[in-house]
Image (cartoon, rainbow over all chains, first blue to last red; front, side):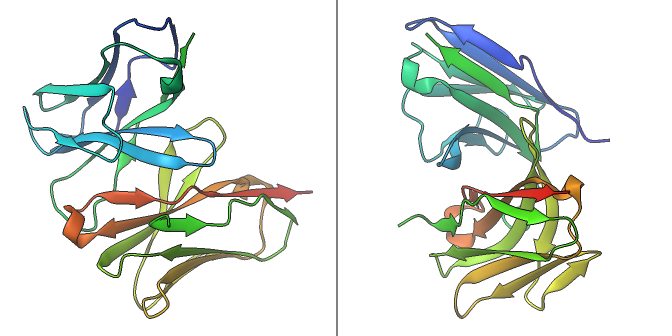
Length: 114
Length: 111
């Protein structure tokens, strides 16, 4: 059974804190993604990675960075958390290929920045 | 204009009803299409792919109209367990195969 695991389901942080969201997949997938999901806006792509040490900006990368040191792990970093980064964060992975990719999602991390 | 647009709903229907969702996309280079389902406070999961010729999976039928740039999802004989948000997803060839998600259509099936 495919599995994408996000380290926390719920997280509360203060403005200005550095926040790490971790994602691990056990399917040997090449591609990994970070999205945020907000009411009325749907899922928006923050960053993605096609391979170890590779990263590409998505549609809303500002205020975020990522790290992919190992194939199975993709970390999202909020360098200095702000209240407008309160959101549901979803990690996903998929096999290599540019078309017809099916993405498998983690359960999500609901982050509140106070 | 959003790249993928859906009616957010909510659609409130009785059990046994037939309900249809539409989704429009703006980029004619769009190549692959899917419907994902997301239960409340859960992650999205693939419901079905959408093929050019249309395809059916039990009570679910998906159709694609490339000329008008929309896809549809039809649910027949709806069940309480169909209550969820349905996400329209498009892969755009000239954007490196990124998935573009619609904001989702909420369905609530009542007894």
